[in-house]
Image 1 (cartoon, rainbow, N blue to C red):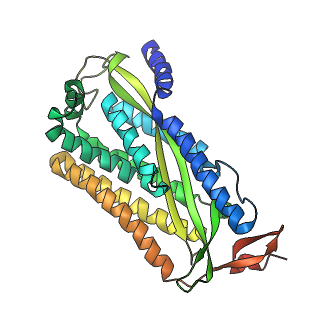
Image 2 (cartoon, rainbow, N blue to C red):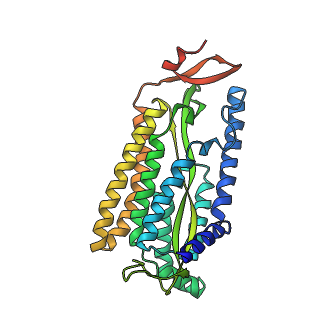
Image 3 (tube, helix red, strand yellow):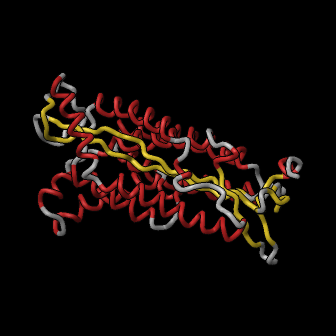
Length: 321
């Protein structure tokens, strides 16, 4: 028990040596700054304050992360330092597109899996030997399960979206007319404990760890895993739009789990499951855009409220002076 307590403490310390946490704070500030700048230009004032993009996510994300960590560590799923830093690079690069949509686990873990597969085949000539061995020894059969679990968390966060969690915007139609819309946008951190192939923890059963990458003892690493989503809504009430997306993301997670189970018997299906998760998440994004365009507009530039113009639905219009 003492070894576990020590490793949990070390895992928390190791978290501060990773770029995830610092980049997440920079990303939130960056997103908030440009959002408020746009709000002031459009409405004459900021609508929401800094870091609002993570508002209302912390309790659920932490609890979800701890529950998922129990499953990950209980099964003995092991990662290596090169994999962690490669994941960090992928998240940083994807976030440079300024869209939280690319921070879905479908993309971050999907790209990680494909890159590790390619580096396993071609990386011996370009990577340090120790890094190449660490990457080539990883069994990514469990990745689809992890993607599915994180998609479920994403789906629940989407379903929990409230009216005051979305961001009003004004955009131009093809004819140059002002149109209103809202942006569903959140980013959060899911704390995920994983095993490292060195540390003070000794195997406590013959089957543990399930996926062994070498080593006779194990440590813990706490990865502050960044997830996010972003969708523009023009013709549907934001809460209804968020729930439409949530249902489809949950359905995608179910499909990935079924493929992952089949991957236990036919390993190539695990890679197919990862690819399906990436394609499926894109289809949901694009499908919602088409679904939104088919509806009648519900937003307009509403009455003056506090000296500024806000986007409201026709229902909310009745509440304005």
